[in-house]
Length: 242
Image (cartoon, rainbow, N blue to C red; front, side):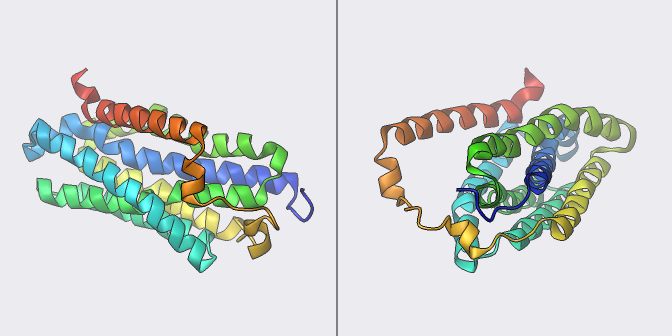
């Protein structure tokens, strides 16, 4: 049923903004990976410490995905959660630039994972509530993959590495924080909070976590996802050595 949903134009704008925001998030997340050839010798980091920086962020990201999603559901509020999380991970990018030791940098990355982890689950919740059912799968794919791949994987090294070479890696982290602040402001002013009826999808039954994992396809996709993300995190952390 599509009755009561917002216009097609708003739905396209919504998905575009959420995709852009997640792309900026990945821009910030991957910044350290691309800047590591500058950071590691400056802070005298071992390869073990480089791995801990990446795994620490990934761990808190995974935890936040559950925690922030549940908090958002209980509060019945989604837009403010995304805006606050976006501002928080921008501040963590600034703190990363200020770090003068491994522990300070690790703390900044752990906090960044906590800020970033809940953004996509809440973004998916908004998309599910606002986008017509026949376009929902495409919208979720665009929201999660377009911005993150374009900005986080393609644009980030082209921007951050030249800045680090010209001005230093700390300035590159400061620069990485600016787009997120702009994105948070745009989302605050242009994205509308879904109503309770839109979020609940009427009388559509909801599966519990146990019921979902009883499905063979869910089990299989969970295993594939764990293996794929593990590969990506290792690759991002040590890509400079390839």
